[in-house]
Image (cartoon, rainbow, N blue to C red; front, side, top):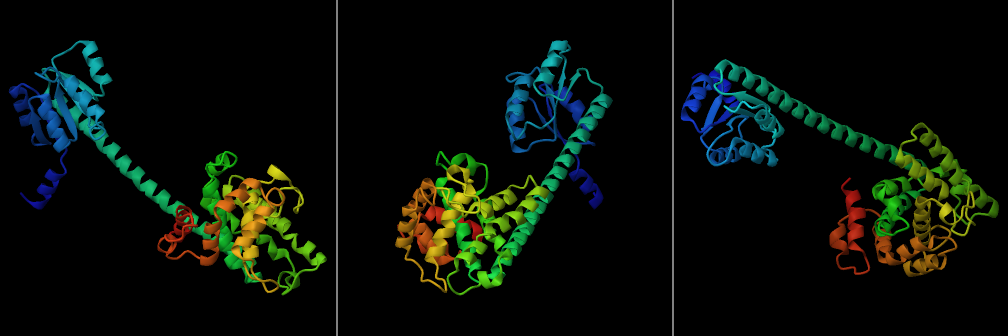
Length: 394
């Protein structure tokens, strides 16, 4: 046999014939053997064992057999996820309409009455195998489309990440201290999300978003600083009251930038989160914050989380006009502002995550995270791993 014939043989469909009458099997093998790869069984148990070992493309199944009936075999095939899609054609002498109806109800694709005409069997096999091949081709096409969609989605995610980094860098280029601050506050926010995800006040909101999306949105919290004059933003000393009033406008500037994007993409959750964070992260729980003097739960949850992340990093970080506050003092200061500056529940979460925040502040960027934190009892290793390590893999 030449190579082309072997290839043709390899590509032939496989047919399992199940019948307790040897003459019927001989007739079908003789008539169909040149067109299909034929295997045979003379009872239901043997047929099921053969299917389990090597599933055929299609099954010609007698109904009345000793032991398991063809109906019983069909039921077993359709109960098994690995064999449920194998087409079954019943071949039987039973002609009652109710018998035919039952065969179709059990999942058979066709029902042929004995004595059968070989040409009819061939024709029906060809039709059902063509349908089967078309179904397989469609499944393969859908799988390819799913792969392409995943690839495209990943490309879009990478593109979004690059755009976000570019936008965040606008503020970074104005203020060299901003870059590390942006990264750390992102991780603080994600750590708070993980900690609060089962809290009754926050769980519904946090279940509706990905903590990494909220963390990424947090990187744009100071995007409005691009609108602050250099002589104020870069001043190497404490600001005057007038200068402080000017720099406070960055929250409104950020909202003006991001709200325009939200209006163009109203369904984009990430942009909405970024806008809320930028506009509200300087609001205070008691209503004395800026720019809108929002109070209590009027302040969106993203803004409340960002407020603590922003303040903690600001006071533990060195500035040209001040020394860094020790971690324990910083935690004490924030806890003292619970109910005034900060949402009490978010402040409590920070108190429980003190060691974790300290670790993030020290590391700044994700590195060999797990090995470094195992021995630190005050650090929630699960949260640090889920936040820093997951971001390192992105």
